[in-house]
Image 1 (cartoon, rainbow, N blue to C red):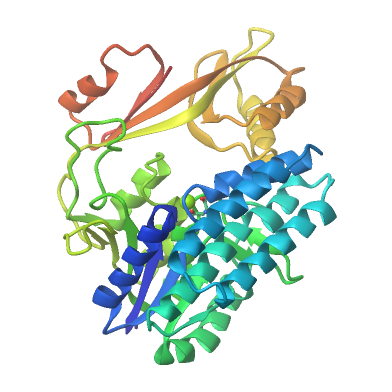
Image 2: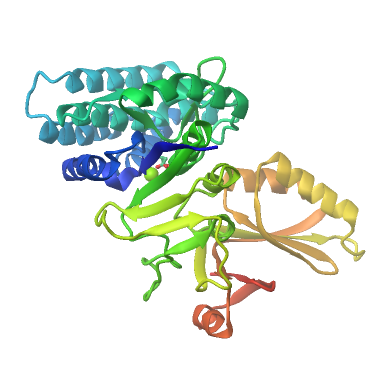
Length: 424
Ligand code: ASP
Ligand code: MG
């Protein structure tokens, strides 16, 4: 079923963080992309999404956002100046234009009472900027390519900041236009972005560019997809927190999806399903060592991979106690779940006892306060913040000991394959 000759490369923020990174990227495309039809999905440069979030935040609060705006602009222009010594290069005009539009959007769309909608219109500029630079740079490197606006292809609803994909239209549009295009040349497009029927920009959730790449891979029936990262491949733990990490050479879709679900930051959790549905192998490779083996994620079966250690930070633990010494009932749970679902608070772990029910979730201050407002008449509510959720997948006693050593455990759970606890 797959159009085997099509390959999708996803380059994250770190692979376009400065001029040297752009040069390295172009070399990877030259030496590894060659024989295939190639579509490149790129994230915003370095940490520029965070920077744009800050600009957006200040504008939203009616504060002076000019300094932060200029800083982000300067960052992009510095990189461009290094890559394009020719001052007449078209890329300068394109970038000026994009920053001009962003600036006018910041004034035009704010103030608003719909923060999330405004967020999508503004924060998405990061990818428009990086993909524009990449398009021009590859062009200059004799890598003929077309810049494609992913908002015209990845069709979504208007769940701002976490848009849901309209798969049938997305697949149809991508097939219709990009299949013929890829036969002629490289395609460069943005991660993270989608578009509504009304022509507004949506975003697919932070770190969503992996998912974007998988949407293109699925829609094109690609032969493979590759995520280029600053680590060797898919590791069993984050090297920032653990020594002696192991890189999996081959691992199943299932294992990977579970690791992403528990909070491993390697791959966006929504990436795997579209690939698994069409059996498209996913490679994770290092852009610092492009000839390295990396990891292949596919439909393989292995007995027991090395234990994976995952830490999800910024968690809060909320417990709901009944007020009248009756037991926690299904009616109570229904009220709690309804409120959580309405406020889009995702449960990462939960547990009930006779008279209370506890939930560990990502901490969102406003949502937590709304939750308390809704449920405070029915329950006694306690919560702790600044916690971490630790998970060991495929645990054994040694890995559990290694992780729990010297930690105060607030909530704990164990299945046959997975051990989890919440701690400070
Ligand atoms: N630039 C977006 C972010 O930083 C999307 C991505 O990098 O995947 O969240
Ligand atoms: Mg990023």
